[in-house]
Image (cartoon, rainbow, N blue to C red):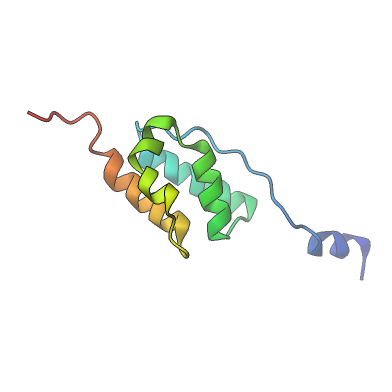
Length: 96
């Protein structure tokens, strides 16, 4: 085995830094995050979840706090993405 193939097998962590996820254009920000995951070779659900969680602004955090405080055992990223998309679009709508 060559030194190069040893290095490839020993990659344990991939660094990625997402742009902040704000309530405005959240669907586009999620698409951007997913492109970043693909470019970085990130496929693990928990890794995606943690990266998105680290990038979400405080206003969105408060909207999905119930999910963050009691996350599902599986498909955390999928659940967070779904709830963020469905709940954030209520922002800015008139209540009268």
